[in-house]
Image: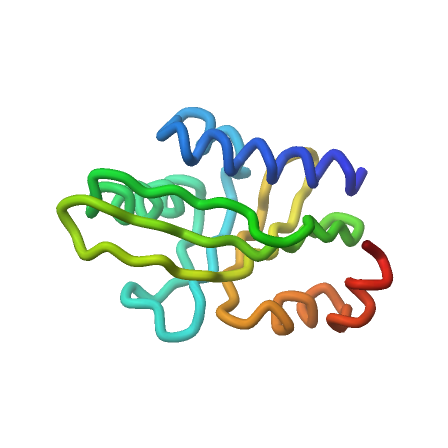
Length: 138
C-alpha cells in the first residue's frame, strides 16, 4: 500500500501546482487534519477537509504564482509518506523560497493527516526513522 501512497503524494504536488482545487479536495479525507510547523503565522491545526482547503487557498491567493516541488526522495513507511520540498512564491505578496518537510498519513486512499516540519530529521523521526535509516532504504 505504501507505494500507492507515494503516488498519491506525487499527484498532490501536481494538482497543487496546477491550482486544481477539486484535485486537492479529492486528496484529503473529509476528516483530514493539517498541522503547520511550529512558528507558522496562522497556528493550527486545521481540522476537516474544508478547513484544510481554506488554509491552502488562503495562502495561495497571497501570490500571483507559487509552486511546491519535492527536493528529496519520497520515503514510504506503511501508511505514511515523508518528503522534503521547496515552496517558491512570486507576484503580489513577498517573494520567498522556503524548504519544509511534509509527512502525510493515509487511510483508504485519502490523506488523513498532513504535517509540516522545518527540519527533515524531525519529519523522519515522526516516521520512527533516522536520516541514516532513510539513506539505507533509498
